[in-house]
Length: 193
Image 1: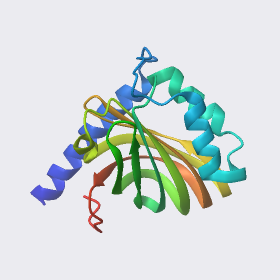
Image 2: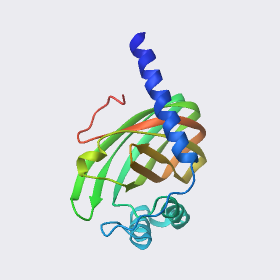
Image 3: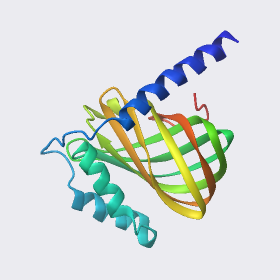
């Protein structure tokens, strides 16, 4: 019981931090020589997502206005489902200009008014990544979904100064809003906590 209470308290603290960062004003765009431009990300996104990415450019431009140039991005796939509480699992590859490509996995729980399931192709923009090892850990955020059959969406997840902005296009039926986190790991695991 104490362990569950501790987990709920940690989850609530992460959610409060994430919500504060999501609702805060736009960040000043930092110009980084090792960062990716809007054109590079949009071109990669269109190649990765294909014809379903009609609104991709608008989502990416919004992320660039708020957070500047990402110094990495992840391309991958994930599956998620929820009935009040939910889980999601994914895998992909981190691309950086100065540290190469690295395979990684993510999983995480969520809690909220959220129902349905989906499978998605995911591109995560990565901001302020100090090293490849810095990506491993928990990133908290608020997610909202509303689609039947398919859709395109963007979320913001944070930990310390590192920001992940997952942009995904998926198939399934999903409706709701939830608080959750993603745990990024170098090896696959079924434990979302």
